[in-house]
Image (cartoon, rainbow, N blue to C red; front, side, top):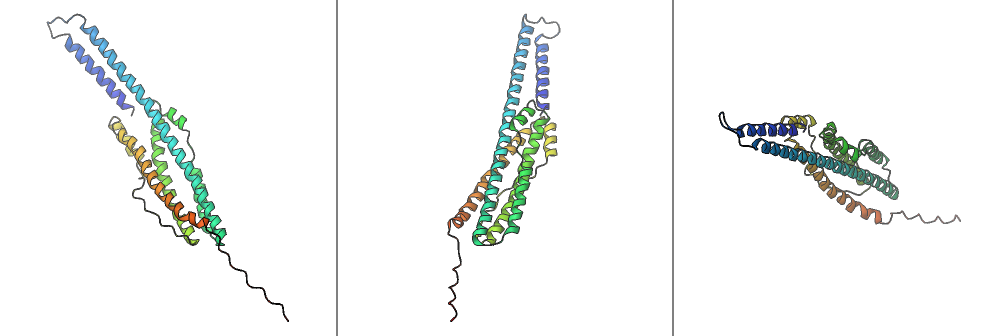
Length: 253
């Protein structure tokens, strides 16, 4: 990304110098009075517009990083709360049915602890500041925004598999739709190199990826969560099954 403003700036300077030289006329011709001043003012105005546009671009990028990191934090925090609720539901249902599913719920608890460690909240304001001016922080933000969602979805799939097994053991089979597409494990090194050698043109696609991959994940996750809640909620509202006590033994005669 840092190469793009440099390339454009150098190109503008070279172009205007060429125009300035050509306007002075060929050998033996007298330049028009005031032409150099007019071109200098034009050069200054266009360069000012360029750097104004550049300044607005880095502000927009900082705002974009802030919103992407904030969206990441909100989703990850929400998922941890959902995990906690589903683990509590499984334990409550096991107690209600007098069924020992401690081994399965321990696996769910372990997955939940890993999510708390790996999906730690990142300061959106700090990363927006670090990304300002096409610095190293911008590239690192692009790195973790790609990789965090990939790891998050893989862990989420494992949690859902354990959850389905747990509820199946409790007599509550859950039929879930398959993900039509997964968040791919994209190569940061490849994206970084392509961004540099294309003068930041490839960065446009990188931004598209940072937006579209989480959006696809959100859409499919909503369907999975709605399906789980629709199939589990009726079980919680049903009365507990109890075994009738045996009739009292008549006293011995």
